[in-house]
Length: 216
Image 1: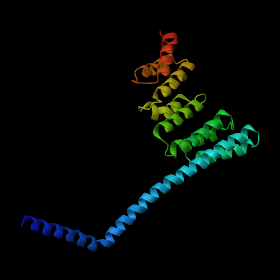
Image 2: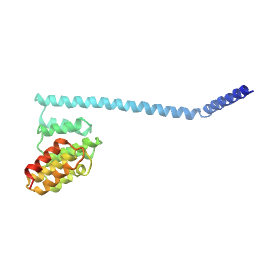
Image 3: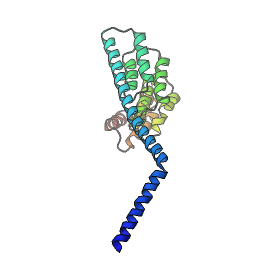
Image 4: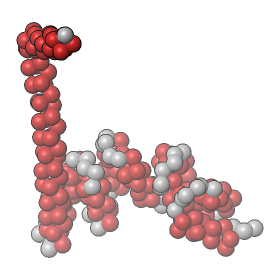
C-alpha cells in the first residue's frame, strides 16, 4: 500500500513539474536566452579588452622604439603618447605620461598638467594608481606652486590612508624645509612617524631630517 502511495505521489510530482515547464516554456526560454547572452557578452567584452590592451602595448612600445631610433619628431611623439593617455589604460596611460615628463618631450607645464588631469579627473584608474599620479603631479609642480596650491593637490592623499600618504607628507616637509619654514617642515616630518605600517625608507629619511636639521 505504501509503495502504491509513493508511486502515485511521485507520478503526481512529475506531472506537476512537466505542466510547470509546459506552462512557462516561453518564459524559461527567454530567461535562459538572456542568461546565455549575458555570459557570452561578458566573456566577449573581456576578450575585446585583452585585444585592445595588446594593441595599446604594441603602440606604446613601437612609439618608444621610434623615439630611440630618431624615427619620430617630438610633436608627433607627444601626439601619440597623448592618444595613449586618453585611452585611460591602467598600465600604459600613466607610463605614457611619465615618458613624456622623463624625456622632456614638452616643456609646456600647461600641457603636462592637462594630461595629469585627464588621468586624475576623467578616468577609472585603480585607487592607488590614481594617488600615485596625484603625487607625481605635485612633485612635478613643487618648484613653482605656492604652499596652498601644493597642499590642495596633495590633500586627497594626505587626508586618506593611501600607501602614498607618507610620500605626500615628505614632499610637503621638504617643500617647507627648502623655504626655510622649519616649524612647518617639522610638523609634516613628525606626521610621517605616526603613520602605522608606512614606507620604512620614507620614515627613515624623515627621522634623519628631524634629527640632523630640525632637532632644535
